[in-house]
Image (tube, rainbow, N blue to C red; front, side, top):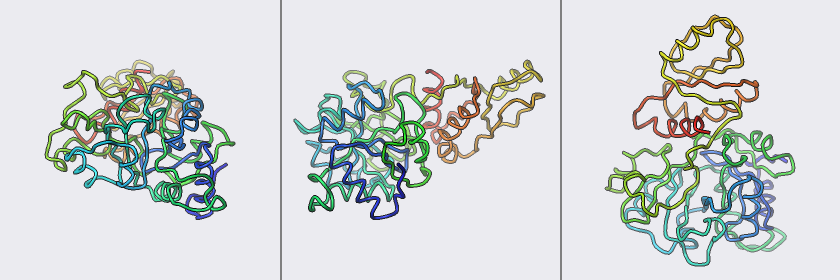
Amino acid sequence: MILDGTLPASIAAAARVVRSGALLGLPTETVYGLAADASSDAAVAQIFAAKGRPSDHPLIVHVADASGIAHFASAVPDFAQRLVNAFWPGPLTLILPRLPGVATAATGGQDSVGLRCPAHPVAHALLAACAAPGDAATHGGPPVWGVAAPSANRFGRVSPTTAQHVQDELGADLLVLDGGPCAVGIESTIVDCTRGVPVLLRPGAITRAQIAAACGLQPLSKEDLPAHTPRASGTLEAHYAPAAKVRLMDARALQTALDLLGADAAHIAIYARSALHTRSSRLVMRRMPDDAAAAAQQLFAVLRGFDDQAVKLIWIETPPATPEWEGVRDRLQRAAAA
């Protein structure tokens, strides 16, 4: 069931669902999440089951504001606090030391926890309603200080960026708050803050340069400090994959392949910034935006659309090797590895 997330009655109904220990489809500015009470191991277990996700692969906990950190993290380094001040609410997840006995299932049993404060107004309203004290008739169940909310799709598949994507993926029985298409379109930047310096575990809309400017430290890559790197959402080599096989190529290789196939080319989708030519009328061709943020916003919807058109192959022009494209490159490289 899809509810209009802008309506107070929808927020109240969704808060009751979360407080009761059930699952909820939740819009954020990045992608739609599959949300449950982060402090309830039984509720979180339903997320892993619904997604087919390994239970040791940690989830990100979403909080209403920075005060929610104290319910899950035992410490916040100074540089991490500067990142909170600069980017929350927004598409930034921080890995922090976890309080003992809290969110054990949501963190995959690790001694660290990933925390984020989403910027989407519907997500914020839902989180505030879940954490608010009140009677059972209004809210149902005890306050919920944070919700675990990985992307609302089957494990390893393309993330959803609309409420309809969630319903198509997980079924009509799931309650989904409709907050419109996601503005960012790819998952949050993840920064590990447990090792004395910021370590970028997953690129996203917030870039390395922005992280460095905000906290005064240049973020390292996870390869720079490989020992005991915390597991984090969306960092497996193969991820974000449509049903069709994805292949990345430069513009010259794409054009050469189209020329070789000629008029017989079929069941192939092309997503490229460069102008390409083909003699086939049976190809699905879509132009990738020149702007990295615009490409990120539409990326997953484009991949889902290609699957809906039953193509067998998706050929994508490799994004530029520049900082603003790092998040899009990361998602496409993982999709191609699946």
